[in-house]
Length: 410
Image (cartoon, rainbow, N blue to C red; front, side, top):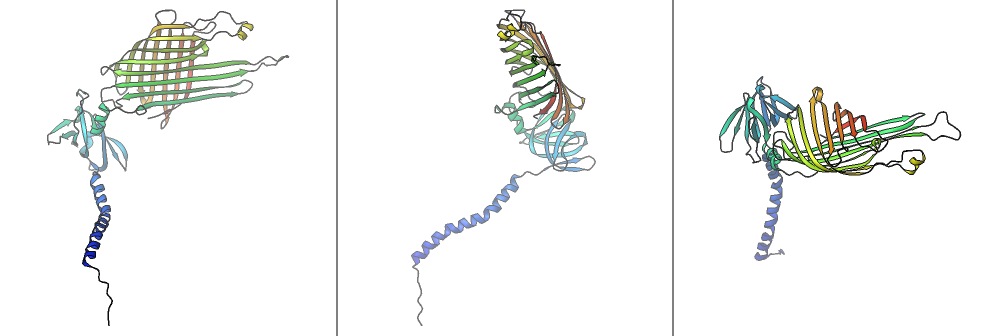
């Protein structure tokens, strides 16, 4: 019996083995890749922080930060809580932090983050080299993670990041023999760099806008023959301002700003101000803050003039001349957090013209924001605008009481 065998030459076998070797290594690599990635993920995931209380309770999670003699700890089970250090027996964190003492003088130099632990009411920080120091809780100002500290200290956030403030809206609608509506919209934004209170301020930018528009129609009752046109009362008040502050020290800052105004109640068609000056923070605490400022500016005033229809109805002929002025603003701004997280704001500005001393004005604002639900609050605002040289036939003073609902961004 004869067998027909296909005999592969030795050289061809060597070639097949050479080709098969890369595929074997590739298959082995693919088989081991999931185990390798799983091991890397497991190694990259830090162990949770553990806080042990003096009463024996224990909680796992992450140390977020520290303020004064308390630490903020976040756990999946109870969320974010604030714990006084005197209740902590031991707390160790896998992250590195910068500890700032109450008497530390903060500069713009980066600082090395160190390992932090809380033991029996005191903070122990250990440098990478092994040197350590213990700080009593009464001497601790802030505990900040290293990445946040150095980013806030010298970082340059984008133009759209870091804004805080609120958006307000309100409406009044009347539908009867008289009919009409009044609409109010406002935006108040602030961007402070850095965004945290424990670092020296670098810049601050503010933007405010308020628009009040209303129209009330009162038909003639009883109607005459021929018909008498209905009386129409119109409200149109607009204000917006923008200011950028550059801090020269922790309290003194240079400022540049602009503002635009329109007030139909004073015959002011359009007012624009552009200027620069200096400001000073008199005091700043977690509860309240007071700033004062002064500037030198250019001011343009354009007034509403009588139309031909007004003249035919017997309106006075005299017109109010438009003005280009050089002046200064002197202002103050105060805010305070009241019990119940109620926010009180107050500001006043006196605007004096130097090339026409009769062309002066003043602005006052008093507001309350009462928290209602989460980020929503009820806002109550009293606004007073005084213009010493209004358009002919218009009142000098314009007083508004505005209520609305405010949504806080952060």
